[in-house]
Length: 278
Image 1 (cartoon, rainbow, N blue to C red):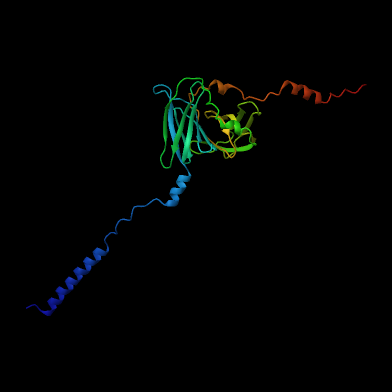
Image 2: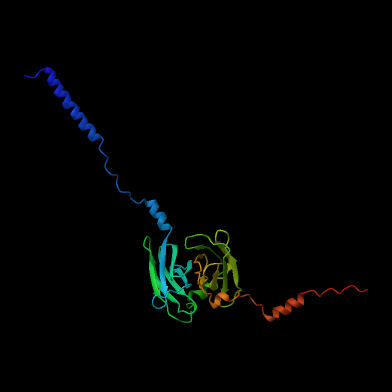
């Protein structure tokens, strides 16, 4: 018959084994944390930042169109105009496009302008347009019917920003506006250090816009200026083998006063003083 001492030893061993088992289970790794969910505020901020509108243009089979102006205008009220150019590979992209439905126009001298309507942009998808352009006169699309009414409205201030595709501000870029019907003098403005610009007292209606920056492809299009409009331009670097077109070599146009203005100015000038007589 086992002694009381041996019984106590067995009980102690069992107790130690049970304690070790409990300690091991307590040190087991915790269950994996739940999968992170997208915060509503982060999602709203991303949506507010807009999404990307992208695409490409080619002429014939595998021949990219370089330097075509791409214009995206929201169809709701036309107060947001975004411009860029096709790069050396014929591709383009416009960042920060708000949700909405847009008219997208591709235009280049010597090619038929191409218009895509009802282009829907909705975060987080990235609409992609792949188009094929054809040789043609390269004239801008016909003026919208609303422009005639807009021309009667009071002058407005057009503001905006010029950046690169990476949203880097581009200073010292010239934006030149020439009235389509010739009823206003040309206007010009240069971007500041933050790439922003503002041109006041601009009559609503159709203006031909040219954007030029050193080392970047030029942007040329027609804008239907409206009150409260915002203009965003994304410039694309010139390829190393870029050949300037005829429009790139033309000097900027300057307003020429009517002949009668010259006669009036001459009449208003004071006569030169006679030298004193000896």
